[in-house]
Image 1 (spheres, helix red, strand yellow):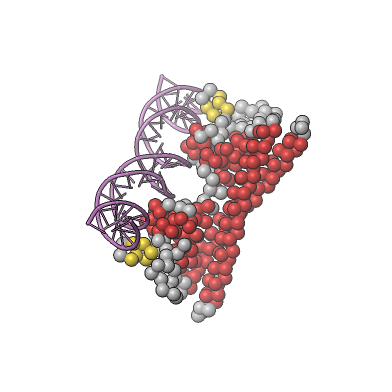
Image 2 (cartoon, protein in one colour):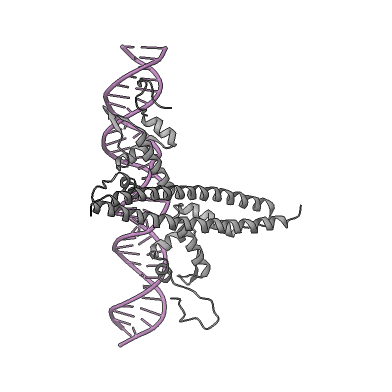
Length: 136
Length: 136
DNA sequence: CTTTACGTTGACGTCAACGTCAAGCAGCGT
DNA sequence: ACGCTGCTTGACGTTGACGTCAACGTAAAG
């Protein structure tokens, strides 16, 4: 999976854009798009992009955010939060405030999902009941 | 809230597009857009749209679907499912299959949310720890 | 040394989900 | 009768999230 051709033992693993795209099942265009928006910033070897483990971590976070329906801009502010400076009290308090907003949002979504699953279960019961009443 | 001017006691409640939009905190344009896509189909009084309770129910489902990040087309197939004919075995089996797909999807999203909340909690702990180490 | 594979940067296209006019009709308050 | 308000139907604009070329560089493989 990883590009090991130029990696003597003990060096860090790196990946090309194609390997990254394949692994996460997206197109290279998508990966580049995320870079244009500043969500990832891979190393460059000349003009060629070199992806490290932290880029994979971020991409994982991006795609999870997408599955949850967050817009990319919002995703950027969230994952940037993890790397934000937290040296001063004001900075830490800002980050903690952001965390609270995120949590509130996520908890709303969780409730929505619970509700949807509950309804779905009830609906399934009714369907199975209908089915059991059919001839045959 | 409801238009009662022409409602003698005992008649069903109805609402105008503006009332609906206000109640759900969307624009009338949004409501019309959903109608164009076939997600709701209010009664007409001449050219004027008249919304009943079932329209409100559907709009609620639509907006919840949106909060969960589903595209409108997919939302339409889901809420249509609840009204789908289920008289024949093949129809019921189709519906049950769709329900299963929906549940799998929702459960994936729930896992994503749980993960995100867990990470967020860990991150908050680290931040609070940092904060407690600050002077003052 | 050319082919082939994979990489690069634009630039334009597309689709969803509306926003934003424009222009018109319909009732009703004075 | 007249204007105001609220509703209507187009029709075009916008934004986000990519898709889809075109045109080019480069490095290993035949």
